[in-house]
Image 1 (tube, rainbow, N blue to C red):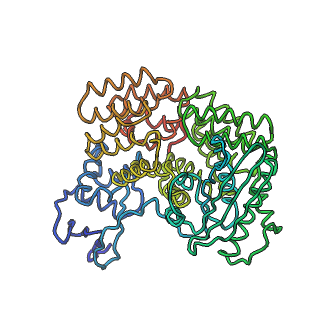
Image 2 (cartoon, rainbow, N blue to C red):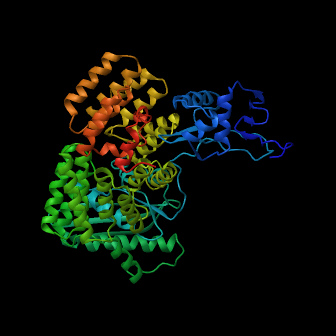
Image 3 (cartoon, rainbow, N blue to C red):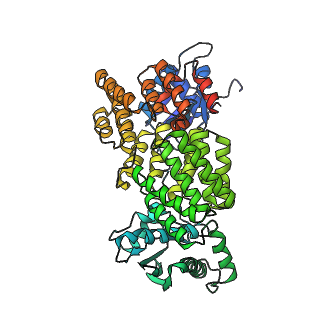
Amino acid sequence: MTANSRPPDYRFGRCELQPAAQRLLVDGEPAAVGPRAFDLLLALVERAGQLVSKTELLDRVWPGLVVEENNLQVQVSALRKILGPEAIATVPGRGYRFTLPLAPAGGPPTLAEAPRPLAAMAADPPSIAVLPFVNMSDDAANEYFADGLSEELLNVLSKIRGLRVASRTSAFSFKGANVDIPTVAQKLNVGTVLEGSVRKSGSRVRIAAQLVEVATDSHLWSQTYDRELEDIFAVQDDIAQAVVTEMRGALMQEGAAAPGSAQVTAEVQSAVKGRSRNAEAYRLHLQGSFFMNRYNEEDMTKAIGYFRRAVDLDPEYALAWASLSYCYLSQEVNAWAPITEGAERAREAAKRALALGPDVAAGHWALAWVLTYYDWDWRGAEASIRRALQLAPEDSQLVLAAKLMQSLGHFDEAAALIRQTLALDPLNVEAHVTSGLQFLYTGRLAEAERALRKALELSPHRRVRIHYLLGRVLGLQGRLEDGLREVQQEGHETFRLLGIALVQHARGRAAESAAAMRELTRKYATGAAYQIAEAHAYRGEADRAFEWLELAYRQRDAGLASMKVDPLLDSLHADQRWQPWLKRMGLAD
């Protein structure tokens, strides 16, 4: 820089940063910013949108001095009071990122843009939602069959080239609701809807299906089938082929080919890989899926029983093995079964699924769950996920890929995956929870609150952890009484006790916090060691926190997957034991 040159000014939102004058203007008026805070802001703005490490910032703001990291936090807090809490994002364990868009040099100041919501919808027709078929059977117990047939059709169509298919969780949220087709289509962002009914009586089944084009409120196709249960596969394939043919012809301008044409038939047959040809095994898999999707301890056990019977009847049923693996792993991560036992059973079932169907995406997802939450094999998990996505690019399990990227601290990749998941599955509760975690990890608390409240709104059974996470967010916003009321509503006792211990500590109620800690430790030392470590870390009890992390490691606690980015462990980052722990977990930079 020559003697006559001067550094450029930066404009963002209602602000202008003038390095030469060492001045920050807000609405044209000088803001009270200390020299350390100014230097910190300049360092971040110069690399807007990029991660700036804590070490770089400490060297830049306090050159030649040895200072504690909490000095950075003090200056960041001061800047957030001026610029707004969303202007500077925390990247846990690594540093900070300036998030506001910069105006072109010499241009007028811009209004601060709200960060792009993770739930942004993709408008890329042709698209379809498969609504749960109505059970018209005299026996209400046959509901599983109607649900299962709908889900199987959805899974097949999601693998067809050129179709965007709303995921199961979103489509099934309308089950039993008195909602018209246009409303459903608008909420799911689709142009067509497949609906139908099923009547099952003994070995006979009657299926009526119709494909509706929303824009014209017209039927593109409809058909009724009266068949023996043994013919269910032919019926399912015929429906899928008719849907693909009609959508290609009417919506994709490819020229309609007759249903059953060689090309469409080949695509559908490729999409149903891993399916059994045994009608009874297929029925058992449908029944197992019905209970698996309820996702609670009792129903997960029932699901395992049905899947076991399915693979006993058809040992080469790849999809049933993959479903069995998912159930076993769910028992492991929720401490509904001994951790090692559940994980090893999940691994064995996933490997059986892959051996029988190497081109079946479900097997790769099943193995990815085990590699992520039990083996902590990040590269192996990523490889499995990539292969699954090659086979089924629009699979609703994209949320697992987002969680893996979060665990590794790759927040930009995680955000893109969450957006993609919610575009396919806008009513997916777990995707909104994962979105809330993303915002929590990056310090965007207002957006975290919105995402978690949306998850709560969509979760009729108050899914595990939502009240707890929302209570944490409210506490971090300084709304401690609201936070306490929220965590007290948490249905999962482990997280309820953890939340109470955290919020009461923040309120300065040491006795109440300690009481919750004692009960948490007494009841859940096995299965919640990681959560106990989180509480000790948050309370400033580093030695106890590391003791419980060690126990969690010995127990193969799934919670350790998130330790690198977990804000509750922030107090441990300056401890000399922290970096060796990250290396042990394969999470060191």
